[in-house]
Image (cartoon, rainbow, N blue to C red; front, side, top):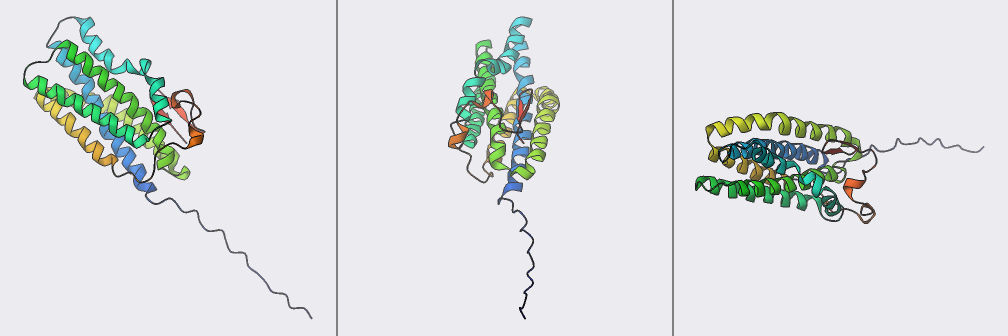
Length: 235
């Protein structure tokens, strides 16, 4: 008689999520909310400062234009940078440029030395930094959040960007300017500082892999990506 041994097949182990993945998603959402809130405030501060210097609608609208013009001029170049360099470092660099720009405006406003050329330069600097921040922020999601949580993280990041940049930011900016230009600029600078500290909580490595460097980020989207406006959502 031959003994037959019964064998039971063990169920496959449940997939483990990378350490810090949940924290990374929360960090990205919080960082996006704070940095876009501050950016929305600057959309109000700069044109309002321009109204104190000139009555020309063209010159005032030109200040507002400098905040969005870099999307037309440098978006492709920024996409090349994002495909070749560490995305978190690019985010830090963008926040440093924003902070330095706001600090310069704060000093000029305190010394009553604000001029239209200064506002134009500040708007361009903030606009370029915005392109770098938004492009790098969209590209960092796939390497910071596992695929299982990526769709939800993208939805929260896109929602935080829209709400804070388009709705809350301008409203808060108007309230801050009513309290004083120095107060508005100071609060904006503090927000950028806090957003940089939040960014330091990300866990992982965010330098693009060799196979990710085939084409600029602005000319291609990773699988499952959808771009709406200035926000790229990667799935």
